[in-house]
Image 1 (tube, rainbow, N blue to C red):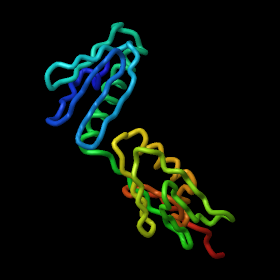
Image 2 (image 1 turned 90 degrees about the vertical axis):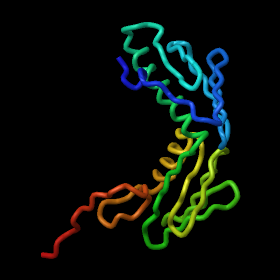
Image 3 (image 1 turned 30 degrees about the vertical axis):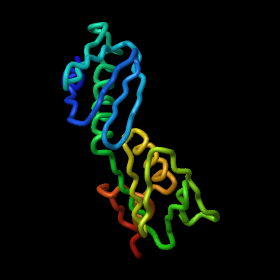
Length: 178
């Protein structure tokens, strides 16, 4: 049984939720999100609450999707009202980041500059060595931030590379002199 799936999602004021067939549309002050949910879990919209019921009780796959659907809908409602923000910090001598049009240009110590295209729907700002990714789709913001971080993961000796703003990097002790 899914504990997350049993919870109801409250629709805040100024947010409009529509279900047509298997497509759920959420409109809010920050934008609109659309997602397709196959018919394994039934989504009920009653007044200002969204509830979820599985079609097959006791099936492991349906129980897993029950909580997943509830989590996706909750993230959509929060996204169109508040939005999501992820922050990356780039540490290292000579490492630079800048936004040019629809691409993020990075100098990461390679023999060539790294250019990453910014997907539609998110906003990226780069100030000194702090990169901020803002958007209404939690999955898109997280995926883009993770792809940028994977270009230069933090190393444990000096901490050089990308790390999340609130991430703690475990440091290792270097070589000792004889």
